[in-house]
Image 1 (cartoon, rainbow, N blue to C red):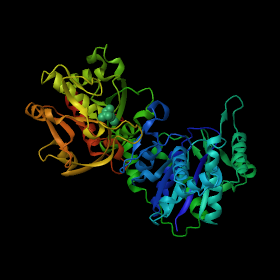
Image 2 (spheres, rainbow, N blue to C red):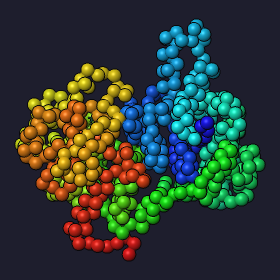
Image 3 (cartoon, rainbow, N blue to C red):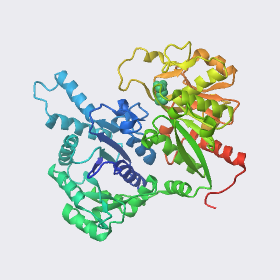
Image 4 (cartoon, rainbow, N blue to C red):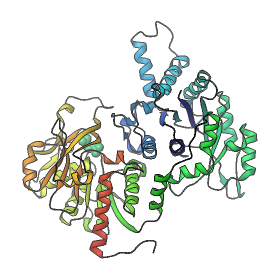
Length: 545
Ligand code: GLN
């Protein structure tokens, strides 16, 4: 029977619950257990698909087309196991289900209440991934911080579920902060004591405390926390700030978080931990021989989290190339009035990011014009590919009024247009072309060599597409559809033939890049940028030399 681990957070947000959950998941997996991680978010949006990236960072998309929280990206990157619609649930979705049932008369005239109806629905969804006995362990991260009004129904559901499941079948890990007061030169435990008290008031005694800290917490603090928070001293786990999130599994291993969890859940069959592939990645990540600079052009660059998966994909692809990738954020809005040559000087490659709406588009097109003509490696993702098509139409095909209808609905040259099935859609949430679709690669294309496969599956999130009326004209002039969806003929990849590396993709390869399986396109792009830099300058400087 599947066992459950719940991860709650206290004292402050942004403590990295997602990374702790993913790291624990990784360790349990490395000891031979089948693990999945799900996230319950206490906000009212039905999913994060409608949220502005400034609000909540990137919207992560699963194979089955769910628009989800970016923590699911961490789960996949760490565990290498795909998540699905069931792995992310919000309060909005819980209420939507309950209200729909009420409207359908399924409560038979009863008063519908938070307890038991909302909590029952939470519990049902918490157990969903355990249904087929596919996993030994389901880790459930609860978004937000203990003490928030929104979190209460989730905590109550956990309390009830622990009773339903019985001993040895569940445990609660509480992640908290141990602040360091510089003036006093001391680490402080009081906020953690308060937050554990708050959790106890809901009827939950945490089994393990994971304490985020800037400084080592030492035995005394551990003993104090154990005493006041009613846990064993071995169950006070230090989570010291790490240089990279990818160090956290090893840090948790040193602190024996995995073994404490397994003994409490009464698992007796743990294997010795196997993190060989993971540690190979870390070794390469930390000792790169090369270093390149890639410009990331987007309009949400103020917030790193808005392009989380792209940043992480560069880390994976960099390690695979023995190369540190410095990602230079470039705000597309600033490019229109800038001297493009000087803004892009010193870069070894340019990636134009996904996005929506018209802001910043012209800047992106100017940058693409420059990198195309100057043969600088270019990678366009989703909107980035669409901008590359517009640039090509305007400056190579001389169709000066070319545009995407997302930006100019009345253009006479709509090289990018709304997909036909999108034309009748007005509702906003979950209505784009979402999730994994097949793409057939042309045998003689660069993409085929990169993937080494005729058929690939990548994930999508868009409403607009390349307009196939212009396909022949593009092809005859050197922009090839290297990948096409076999059912619809939708262009998935555009490649420029007369360029060292110029690829635009309608899908999001960054969503499938993991530590142990980096995205082939990112790996190849980084290799091309490395060649561009080191072959051009003959600079062979190893950065550690
Ligand atoms: N706005 C474009 C579309 O909807 C691109 C979307 C994206 O970059 N994710 O097709």
